[in-house]
Image (cartoon, rainbow, N blue to C red; front, side, top):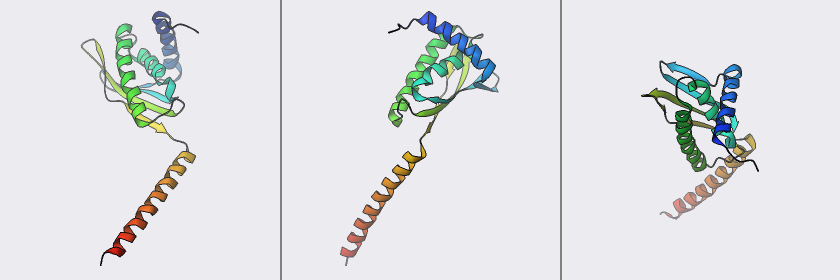
Length: 149
């Protein structure tokens, strides 16, 4: 099993960040010193790597890399907790975007926006379950209404 080494991972992330700049441009300049960074469509288990690489791509030449690691790790914890509370599985497909700015040499992230892509078959099953529950409730209400004189 490979061991996780901060320096190696930061170097790899910086290389991938450069690749992201050249290929995808995963950020949008909203106004001076305010950006929106996006993961694009990604498997939920990989969102943290994608966000960190995008942050390196956007802020690598402006903010010290230790600050990028610190800020993205805090953001990733927040997003992870949100994903868990939403019931998103590791292999589910998500797209995450978040506003970011540099304030006093510190990287600050806003509230992340998470889009969860659910397969049509799953949606159809959930709708059918809801329709059954509504039908049961309707029958109970009709029975109660008939008991009222």
